[in-house]
Length: 193
Length: 295
Image (cartoon, rainbow over all chains, first blue to last red; front, side, top):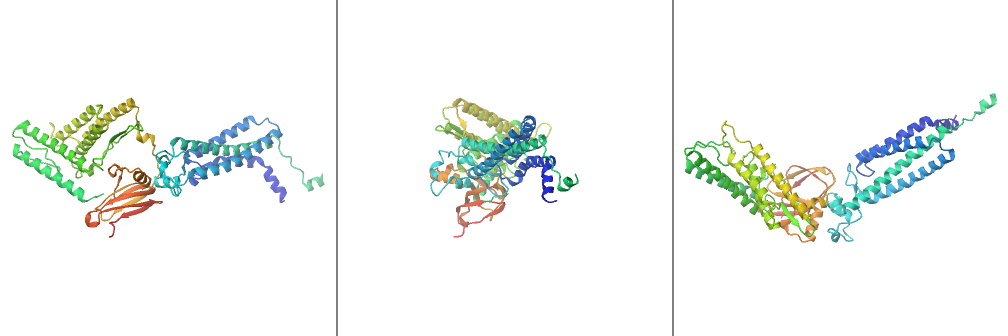
């Protein structure tokens, strides 16, 4: 009992792995309500799930015959990429997006201010304030090209983050299907034997 | 909604005066038995002098409405007679606004002439703007003339009983007029392509965040309230844009979708302390009531 049961549950990776994969695929859809990710959520959520599904299929198809060491290495790389991607996503979303209010999609800012509006800004009047005064229309303050560039960067990083997570789980499942964990006999079983 | 200001009252008085004049002239000319189911111009009657009397009354209607439209674009350059076409040679852009004003701002509700009069006002405004912006180009002359011809034909036909006893449907007039405006739009697009102009709206793609539902009240409902995003107001002030070129949006006593900061201008009657300006911010669904300033 106790730790051995815990190990048994963890060792039952078939159920755990399946649940994890399903959970990871569903997780992006939560953003439809939370609106914490890059906008528009109604596109990004299904796109993220699709990306993860592609990564899982890729992993099962191409990684099934890899050696244990290679699978372990890929797990580490995927986990590292997930952590790095998560931090980068949080940073990018925090710096380059702004929330107009409750229940509203985040608005993506640009990084090149329009020539005609540049003269308005000074130390007491910043672009974010102008955004609030412009119906949260970023095209009134930044160039469209810069806004779209930021949008692409944030979206790619977001997709890569969740794809890494899917890759990590896939490598884990493939590893333990190919090299199943041997269950060591309990003390009682060993004594009887 | 009901906007009853001094301006609307004056406009209605003018329209009523014209209607009475036309009615009087028509009565004196043709001694018809005028039966009318509309509130404005007479358009039906028993002819004694056949076509001549009918043609005279039709021409009077056309002339009266054209004159009214001409007066409106002079009197109200900020709303009914606002700028609808302009060219920016520096940015190589052009601005074209063909959107009709709600006909309820033009004549009394259900008046059969509200659609053609609104179209005439647009035509007059466009002719003024084309002449000012592109005086050496004539791409607009023929299409605008076609629109005017259709509108004048509608005015003549409205209410005039057809051979089968029915009257011209205002909606059909509206469709025909819109078709002509679409052709004008195509002419403008061709001109712009030839001159390598781009629409000013495309250069600065507008994509405001979805607004919150705001209930607007004007108490008492005797002011014209207009708004614009505060950022646009700041730009106008900084670049010293003439007040007549400010692009205001009329705020009606109904629901609007708004978000962020706005600058408003409420034109109260003199007895309610006149003009008022200020800013307000929308961060959630709410109701806003505009009241006259206290002195």
